[in-house]
Image (cartoon, rainbow, N blue to C red; front, side, top):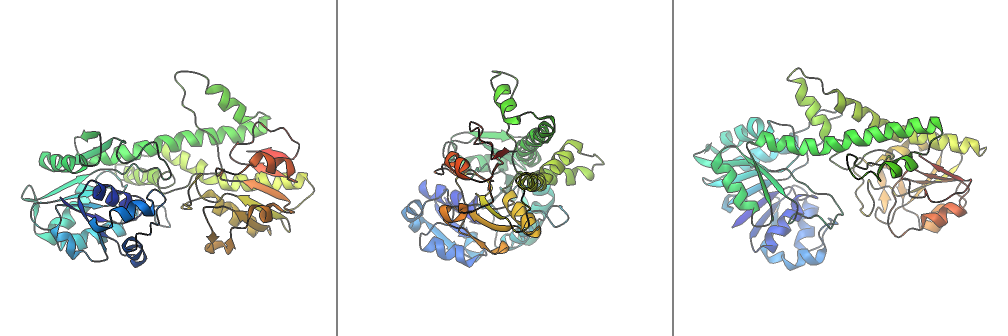
Length: 416
């Protein structure tokens, strides 16, 4: 087969490489010329794809900014960003733009699959009409369309595209069969559902489940602080129950594309059906306020050490949204730094995965330099390879927002 992939980010590039590793020819399309150049040079910009893997399949992957070569493919997978607007409503501009361009070059018999996370109804009500209008084709008469949600967890190696079950829903039975045959080339297990809407909602349920439970434990963390109870001790104890409990941990807030964004896609869609999604809205409210709560915790801790935020050197440890990767999308560390800067804090940070934060005017300092003479060390993201226990014992004040130092017992340690 020849397979097209539109959008070469953390979903699209691994997909392109996986199909190439299965000896399929891939046309990789993105509007970012720097990505096209990097792929041509076999220089991977995605942590889940090594440059060695990219180099090994370079002859099978043709990267371009043009849509015309997609006319020669058997199937096209769309993996473009679907963020929120400033008003926290779905922003489908990238998806609709890609659909228009693709529709102009579609040929009879091709399959189009959307992987971008979105609300139920997008594939049928937004993508399909655009493809039909631009191409002149119709589903069931030369055009096949399906939805298959991405299930990428950046930095994870135990579950990959190959061994993570792939959910697929088609507009018609033929669309579903074509999509299943496509993904069967690179995925060990397929989960067929009755419609694109079911597949779209499956993705949202997965992330809303996490969002709601994280919000619950975050709220309990704030309550436990007032009650003088160690929330980490409580979570550890509850986790010993062998049934009926799933462990979730409090933290400074949610990051990445999925958890801070996806729930709002469903709550927005639900309003069209005159249905308020109160759990989703409340969870979003709690999780969004966590960075500000953490700033208040830092400020309070400095006050207890006779220090004000204004003029204090505050070192942030880890600014990516999760450990072991360099992705800063929606990272709570950015808001924490921004709010502390606004209060007059002299900010520095150390993150071996994130060399610069140009939007905040900061660059990662070597660990020894970052912690030297710091009035407070704030652990936001616990990257591997850093001895946080040693840092706690040497720091004037250590604020742990991830609970990794809960075995330490020193006076200068404050936990979320």
